[in-house]
Length: 244
Image 1 (cartoon, one colour):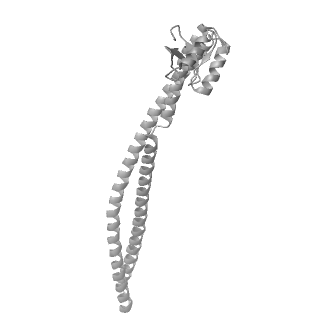
Image 2 (cartoon, one colour; image 1 turned 135 degrees about the vertical axis):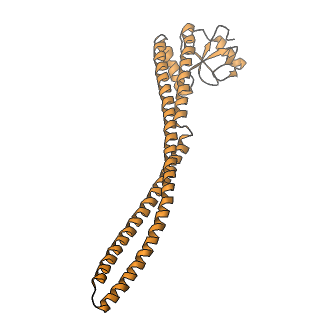
Image 3 (cartoon, rainbow, N blue to C red; image 1 turned 30 degrees about the horizontal axis):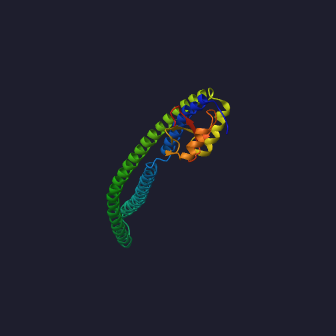
């Protein structure tokens, strides 16, 4: 068995406590990084953005349609004005009759287009209302998402700051522990997830289990400076004065 003075072995409990803090902070960081609210928030923003985009497209299409109708009305108005000017200027009765018929046809078409123009304007008013509502929903979704991101970023920042402080404390602590013992501890921590735990009244705090009489006898027979391991969890068992 590897060996280290009993007093040095006791120091492993402080080191394990610091590593437990680091592990807890890592768990918190992962929980923040995988916060279950992020997915729904992203989905809400995407949905709101899509609805707003479609509302914008609908308004743009209606505005383009309105512009086209308005241009047609202007063109018809200009043709009617030209024909009326020619009509008022006089001429052959046959020509005047043709102009009157043309003016009547143009006027009827203009009237139909003006009705269409009014229909588009009414539809456009409704579409713009929907556009405004969609923009508000999108803005609200973005605001909620930004607030969530800010909350998570603040949490991650706090965890990172605390972890850095604990890591510095650990480095200082390790400097005061026997190097060979630390090496055994680090290897055990990497393999088992727990480097060391107290053996208290026959119970391994690494596994939470009471050791068998045979395992206790083996540990009892070991010298104080021998490093012993938990038969269940595999971590180093630190024997306090009243371990048995």
